[in-house]
Image (cartoon, rainbow, N blue to C red; front, side, top):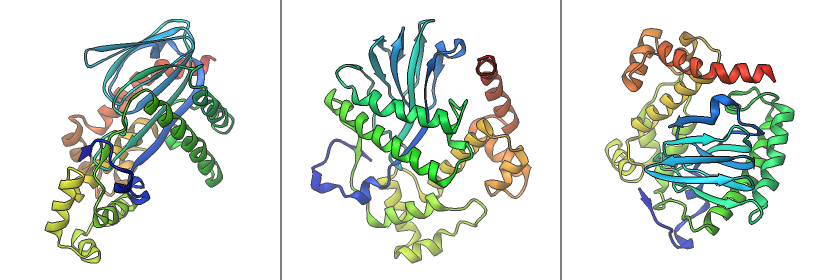
Length: 301
């Protein structure tokens, strides 16, 4: 579970390798009308450099304002954003989470670009690379077709961004959330779960035997360190994949269900409705309706 900053000797590279770090998008542009004033509850970290205009963010009863020449470094907590009509930004949106789902950073800060020029220095080449190789993409980078080389180049840009971002966050007095060093058996199980193919059967007993512990003991270790059992962790990953596919892909709902390992469309629909309170088709329709103004704005450019 989350803790404060540990002594350096308490953590290993293996511990940090369990972090889920993912770049969701990066671009430099004006803020389109549909995105200027809205409520956002996706658990992503946003970073905006105000090249022109200003933004006000309200979250948890607190308010932050960033003006031209400043960075708004947000948190994954729900927030309301209000950009001025003339706003132009560099936008970097990403996730950095522990296996428990706890974000590495939870506190927003506002800093001057002039004080921390390394942020724009790494963000601009990253935005330029994405614009050159994935033209027109602003919010669905993760599902874009890519070559292996382009994937690793994006990861290289993103790694440089994270180094600069953490340097700024820590200089601003924000301590990244840490979890206690993970048991080696938990790390091994996490690696298996993160590589698990949805088309394959999940046999926890066989995996536990390979790792060298009983199912009950492994469940107990997982709950202590991750906050959920291995099966619950896998179901969380499956639901996150379903949300991404329904929101951003053009696959049919039937195909998505089969790709996620469900034996029938009806089984997938029932499972998704239990998790989200909506059927897959209703969820997809609601996301499309929200995206229409953004898509129209993109086509008009």
